[in-house]
Image (cartoon, rainbow, N blue to C red; front, side, top):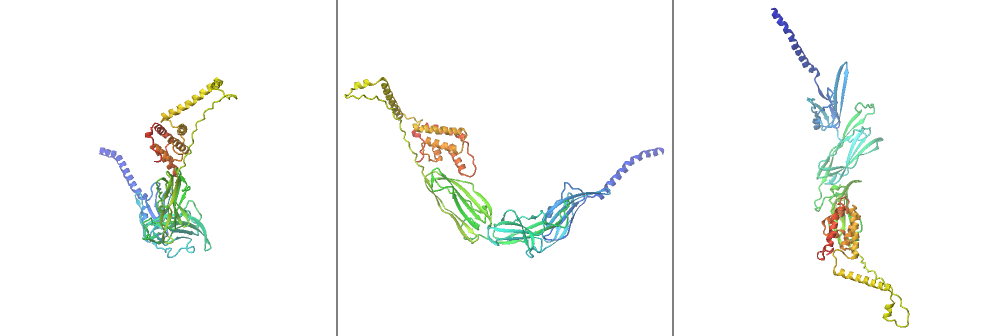
Length: 584
């Protein structure tokens, strides 16, 4: 027995850890019963009006730094006006308490019983809350004025019946007699089957109404219906916080005041289709439309090689530039046209929007003669008179004068040096030939011989040149002018000069090389050389010169091999293989 008692004594300490584990497990199971996390929802009131707001408070009983509740289920029945978050932590009698609140301001979208759905945070969800939303009288039933409310909204349109794509001016006026915080908001204006464009920033001013000064915010929109039928401009919602001057402002507390939500009345407009009897032309309903043209010079006094710019201006009062038809530059044989990119803009006018589009085209005269630009006729619909009208530009004649013939300067050889002759002595008797030669001194003989040799040299050089003309050297006068022009051109190219200086040097050299008149257009000179590199360069240069858009042309230095090749080919070509004439 002792042994048995001894054995039982040795087993007693082994049961102590097991009992301790059981007690700890029971404590762990009991502790969560008092520390269970909660997430609840509450509202400041359950009976509200359709144009009023309600505050939904979502509270979690612990500090939340990274998690946020999912508010997407609220979008079905409510507009979320604003939201804020606050956290607090307190210790009372050694006991700590913390929580996090999300305050969401909601405005119901419809009247009746509206349910705030469960909101989820992590794995927790709130209980649903039912609100009773009363249908308050609309502004159409009971207009809001300064006598009935301190804050109200007015809306109006300039036309109640329009044609499709015609401009409608929609005006909103927000009037308030109490101060408003800077959290005011206005819903976006979105209209189905219509284009809406704001007419600038809101304007603010003050007015005295019924003896009380009011603040007025005014906004205007241009609306363009895209389909015939009834067009409904939906209610606009203005939300703001009216300051409560009785309460002292505390920066650590929510702003004191009353949250307001005001709706504007819906407006219905009748939209008529375009008249069926109009021509197959673009539909342009406008209050006023003008089509004009401007010239950079006199189109009846052009010379070959000159350029002139024509600018077409189409302007419509009551339309945007996107609604205007495109302008096209006329293409005429004998005039190279370089149209620029159209420039368009919308400007604010007294009647709404003034749309403008401009097209500038440079015309370069390449052949003499008279050229006729066709007339331009545009049909548009006068919305004030209710009838179709025509905007017309008459035909325009452009006169190009041939370049004046260059003055030919005759090359007169220098006169021969006269041979000084000795005076004959006066004698009554006739002196014989032998006597005359006897009077000549040696220096006179040498002078006579040199003069004869000089004349013989001139005669020999002239006859040799006529019998064996050199194809590599032009006439003496022309060769000097061409060489000077060539050296000047090469110098400008090697120095990297570009622009008018290089073009002028190129024109002078080509005119001397091809023996062309100074008034010949540069592009014609380049076409005579049949060099595609040179033609392409000049065309790119003219396009950049006559266009308002900035363009880039190759460096003149890159044309150096081409210039040398053209000159060598010209001088090494026989008469049967000469370059084609300029005018043929």
